[in-house]
Amino acid sequence: MPDIYCPQCKQTLDGTYVCGACGIVYEHRDGILRLTDAPNIAEGADGLEYIGFDTIAADYDDTRYGNPLLLDRLTEVLREMMPPKPLILDLGAGTGIFSVRFAKFAETVYACDISEGMLKLLIAKAESEKIKNIVPIRGNALDLPFPDNMFDIVTAFHVLHLIKDAEKAASEIWRVLKPGGSFLTQTPEFHDAGKSPSSVMDSLYNKLADERKIGLVKSPGWGRDDFLPGLEKVFGNYRAIDDSRLHFDEPDLIARSWRQIGDATRSSQIRIDRNAHDAIMREIEAEMKKQFGEDFLTKKFEHRLSLRVIQSKK
Ligand SMILES: C[S@@+](CC[C@H](N)C(=O)[O-])C[C@H]1O[C@@H](n2cnc3c(N)ncnc32)[C@H](O)[C@@H]1O
Ligand SMILES: [Zn+2]
Image 1 (cartoon, rainbow, N blue to C red):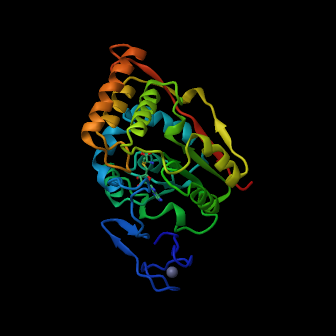
Image 2: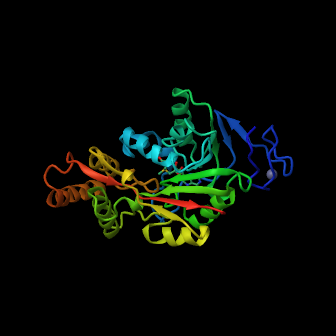
Image 3: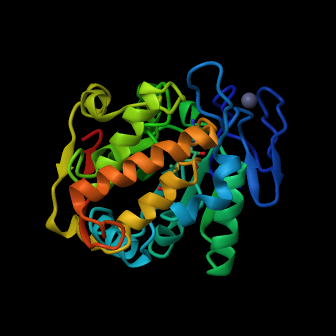
């Protein structure tokens, strides 16, 4: 039984998944310990059909990140920022793109996510690679089921923009980090904001969808403008990593972003009207050709990641 605690009453759970203090019996089924019932659907505007990560789980890996070599290189850079054999919380672990990579050098990776659909894929991935040191937990970032000062490292990749009360999530991250531990984070908002073809494409989509009120989709959580002030407020200090090793040439980037936008479920929040969506895509295609050339989908573009590294509790 791992070192976790009851999110309800903050007491350490005993080996039977029954809270000795409040009596709640937690379920452990299909390899997932279920410590929250919170829905996996983000909050947004009214009058729209909400979807959530359970629904998009099966398409997630095809439409995100892509190039595994890039992820391997990124993992190497991250590893250099961690102590040997770290105890890691991968928060919003999703399908385990990072968890399985971290597991190869970590002591243990706690993969915590609110979506069971995503966690099932994470488990399948770990099994196919014979990885045994991942603990999958259905848990809520707003109420982390871990004691104070537990982890050497907390990672949250592409997560804090999705959580409405991101400040609460950040203070939970702070709480569970050991003194001297680090929080490593990156959000899609920082991809070469406004400059790279994929972010131009993204902003075009948001602008048109906004104008036509089809409901996409400001991120409910921390966006570009509140991310850094928010982190500063909670963590006091942080270090932004601007590392040349985080600039990647990713040939497939634009085609993948196009697939992600094109399937109309790029947002985990809202189902978008198909016709309105297709009309927007045609306009974006024309604009992209104008700005980046007829062959924009197959061109090679450099991809920059910005990482935020927060040193905690010195
Ligand atoms: C965009 S995915 C990122 C997954 C993974 N970190 C990656 O980079 O591929 C965001 C994940 O955050 C999870 N998530 C959203 N809100 C959450 C919350 N309140 N607590 C825990 N996980 C949450 C979603 O279920 C989803 O799997
Ligand atoms: Zn309890």
